[in-house]
Length: 125
Image 1 (cartoon, helix red, strand yellow):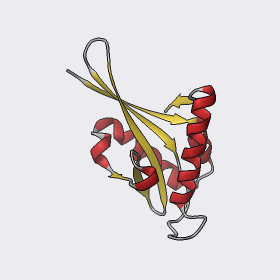
Image 2 (cartoon, one colour; image 1 turned 30 degrees about the horizontal axis):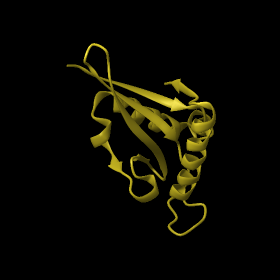
Image 3 (cartoon, helix red, strand yellow; image 1 turned 90 degrees about the vertical axis):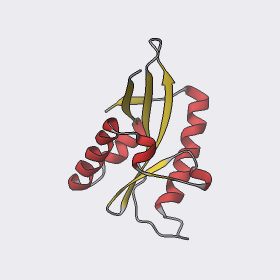
Image 4 (spheres, one colour; image 1 turned 180 degrees about the vertical axis):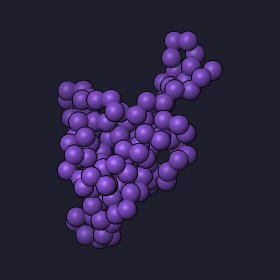
């Protein structure tokens, strides 16, 4: 049984990525591409609380928030689908309304509502 890993980006995540400084953007792309060569569930720290089920990739002061979905293919192979759901950009400021994790929670809630209403808008990396 083979394991296939695909890294996908939501449209909002790609748009947020485009606003970052080039050096940070390159580092984020390198780290997310590397998820295809390892077990993305073990590569980075899982989040807790309202972000349970998501993982974070630290890049300097920035964070990439992603989730992993598992599918069984018709031939029996296991496919891990890594969806970069949110690129939360910002500094970790505990207790501040502009904290990167507070922003991620809001974006994830918004994305879940949008998925319920009109499906996913996903583009492959």
